[in-house]
Amino acid sequence: MLSYVARRLLLALPTLVLVALAVFFLIRLIPGDPAVVMLGEGADKAAVAALHKELGLDQPLPAQFLTWIGHLLRGDLGQSISSGEPVAGLILQRFRLTATVVLIAVTLATLIAITAGMIAAWRRDTRIDLAVVGVSTLVLAIPSFWLALILLLVFGLKLGWLPFVGYVPFSEDAIQAGLFLFLPILTLTITESGVLTRMMRSSAIEVMRLEYVTHARAKGLSEATVLRRHVFPNAFAPTLTLVGLTLGHLLGGIAVIETVFTLPGLGRLMVDSILARDYPVVQGCLLFTAVIYIAVNLVVDLCYPIFDPRVTAA
Amino acid sequence: MRRRLKPNALVGAVLVGLLLVVVLVGFAWTPYDPIAIDLDHPLAAPSAAHWFGADEFGRDVLSRAMLGARISGAIAAGVVAAAVSLGLVLGLVAGFVGGWLDRLMMIVNDTVLAFPGILLALALMAVLGPSYGSLILALGVAYLPSIIRVVRASVLSIREREFVEASRVAGDGDLYTMLRHVLPNALPPVVVLATSLFGWAILSESALSFLGVGVPPPAPTWGNMLSSARPYMERASWLSIAPGLCIALTLLGVNLLGDALRDWLDPRDDA
Image (tube, rainbow over all chains, first blue to last red; front, side, top):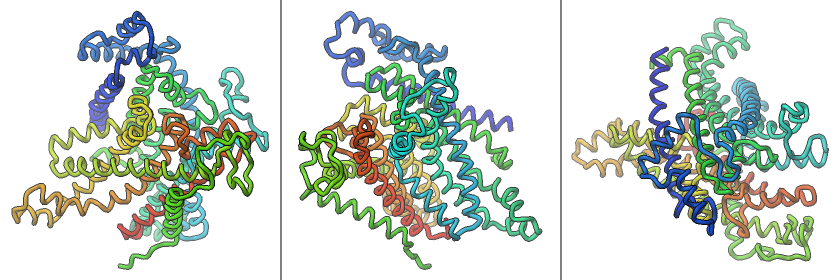
């Protein structure tokens, strides 16, 4: 087990280094002088020179990279051009909101997927199965931002049950914050449940065809026990992988949903920084999302042995 | 072995066919000029004159959605073409040559995969600046790694098969073996992936345009139509109906067609 963990950690290392390299060079790929691009045409020479110095652009490339990595390892992602705030603090503050929405929504979507997928596989080709497949196929086709707009229209405008747009931090008013987060979470739960349900259903069907399931049934175990003890644990791995990939990607920011509901999350921070050409923040966001993605997948990989002891031997 | 087409394949084909018809008709005729401003009828409600209403500049929503179909479709087709052609070459090389080259390519591939597709495309758009070309490039790069992975995986299993060995024993060169025997057999899963990719590209392009980093106005795409409809939710909720419906129906059609294609190419009793 320990060597499995160690090997998996070592495998993530080269990817991390390359991610850092990619993010470092991205800002240097901008045509023209990044400092001029960031400050706008016609910025005065002194400001441009100061920014050059701050970004380290006046040094040779390898030196720039080393300095940047050095700062990075100390958790220093630089300062935002537009607000002057430290990028790392900005990201962590925004990440809390995004992570709340994403974690709740993905957990709910996974629970829905497990229930609906298992039932559909168990009652394959019946009306229930058709309904599950039909709904999840339909859900897959609906863009999240459109669903968000429609939910907003129905619950916010027509029915007036929920606040329209905006956000209050939990620390200020927990109930109000919950109301603001309800629709974003609902939107994301619906959107993500489609693909997860389809995955759960098809892997459960594969497993149910195997001999040991027939054997378990022949032993006289109840259907519920067969499903819970024999089918589910073996059918869950592909869905778990997908949950990991989904989490890894969504935690990096749900830009479109945050935009519709005007939530100050990580995705919105990145989009706003791109529009404002605030490249240190863009770099920081990119790096952060990639690291989150690698970390989440690492955790998921380390979870496999819990479901399937054969994995460690591989 | 009978390969029977299911009814959902038919629905998918009809929806995709409908999209093609809309695009083709749009070349010859749209009810109104999609970018002509009519300040006498801003935010006109759906009526016989404007089936899906008019937007804040009095532009006909149906006409704009028709032109949007062409732009969104062309961008998605460009993304698929770019990602698939490049992915085929790189995946073939990685899978067939193997060794350290393969390992290096896979590490790079995993690195790109570590960035969420839409954020990577966003960042690339920030660097490249807004244009159709950079949109295709940004989305193509974002989706390239998944194509490379699929191609490589099927090449790895194909190159162990007897006919590849036979071709080598017969004295064929590597390049010939790769193009003549490996490539054709690696294609089916790529065709399925390319179909889904078309749907993803439509979705991502509309998301980018919705965020204001995709196709700049006044050219309409379904995404930027939705984006400009958002401030008028209260007064003109119909503005968000047509473009959203267009995206959803297109995606549904493409997904159903992709599912059918997969069942047809891989006729196991899969769900």
